[in-house]
Image (cartoon, rainbow, N blue to C red; front, side):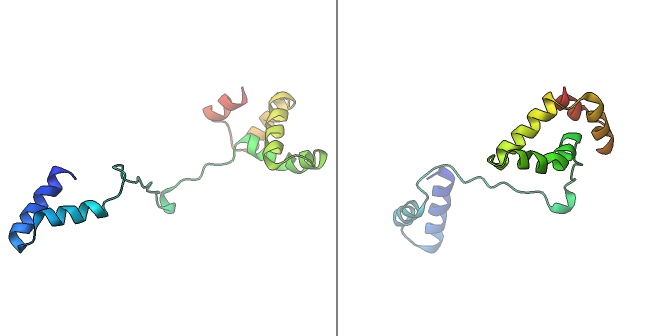
Length: 116
């Protein structure tokens, strides 16, 4: 129990006439066993969040996912996504990528980093 809490209990025990040691024992018994407080992540309200547009790969993958899944029916969803990424990186030519980039609404430095 921290010093601040002990001072508050002492002050209240003097004011209301209860036993300070009994109160501290009862409080210690109810206290959580760990000293770390649970951290709660506060989410931003939905109205303030800006959704990013889909990049060229996402649009291309959305259109080509069914074909890859049909050709590799044994693959899980995660494996299909990995295969799409491999195809995009190794087999799709720069002209096709440029077309998809135009469909995505232009380029950003992040998209250029991913594609290189």
